[in-house]
Image (cartoon, rainbow, N blue to C red):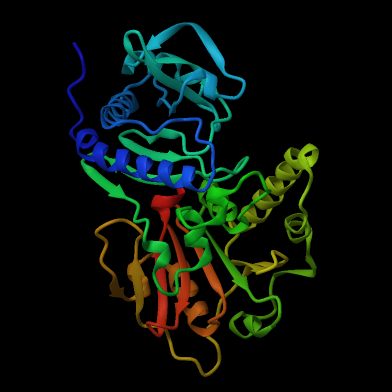
Length: 382
């Protein structure tokens, strides 16, 4: 018996197809070469449908972790090709899942004589390649490569059961939108249209790494030109870093040539993971906007003479979202309240908060609204 159709796949397919078609046109207008053609709606529906039903199955009690990339073998770099293509059905995907569960490995899917099939695996996929990833049972992420050699993909849609979230491409054009959100969206970021230059957004990598360690964390990004942030921190700081630790700052100033790019990116990844790991310690990790580490385990206090923050504006960069004004405690616990207070008192700072359950919030001061703005961005980090 075949699995029943997944209704959300049919609903979201036209929107996803439209996204990829529009971005292919824009890429070609800008002179980019698109090796992976945009999928049609039927292909989008088929890949989402099979990924969903595969995500609900088990292979020897293990949850299958798979990523499907729609491209022909000739469009892939160093493809690993099967002698006989696998049928695009949940049972076949679950069987092969243990071989492709590590991050960065995709099952290549393309059209053949008998319709869609899995031709093999690929580790490097081209710009704007359509990808469906199983994030958890019943939780799928539709994404594409942003054009960098490595780094966070651009999320297009997140589907969980019957809930569909389409990422709002216009969210990054809203007033006071922090650069982190713009880069996560990927639509207006120069990295999306990079033609080979090294590009890396450190805050995006830090956010993803903070979320990955699963312990929750708080990262404060402060101005390197001022020590005013100390007025909002309880002293003495238990884990002050003296002198400031410059490794990440030094790495991001470089622009390595082609031969050194991979080792450089690996070094950046290690430095990012080391700093993100510090956010698991109770308290806040403090980083300058030049990526110099100043402290971790710091306790936030209300700045002398500053009122207690009572309201924040909350938005999520998905279509149909309506801004709400809430008390910071409605977003989470002590970390969220402390982050909102810090940004309220230090208005040139940004606070990144990871929750243990995977939620992620970026707090930034909004001059237009004259209050702290909380951007819920977990949809972009999946």
